[in-house]
Length: 106
Image (cartoon, rainbow, N blue to C red; front, side, top):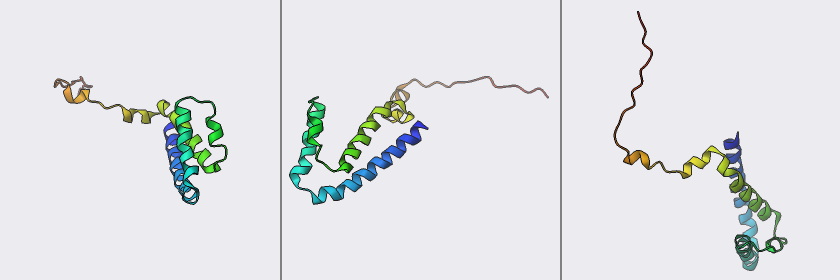
């Protein structure tokens, strides 16, 4: 369920991002640039980051909220495995696992 939920959230995130394009196209450059200021304040742990986006459209806030929620739940899903690269398989010595199967007597 977690993996399907995360994929659903990713689709929602993409939809919100595409929907915010129309808002961005009609807003001023300064209004859009303040989102970068918000990101800098979040990364540097400044407490007034919320005040920066307080006047922004709800679609930006939803986009940010869903994106942060994805970062929270991503490590607990199987999709985390796509970040691990199994390079050990390419450099291991060649060997074959042989298991003894069931033997049928006829």
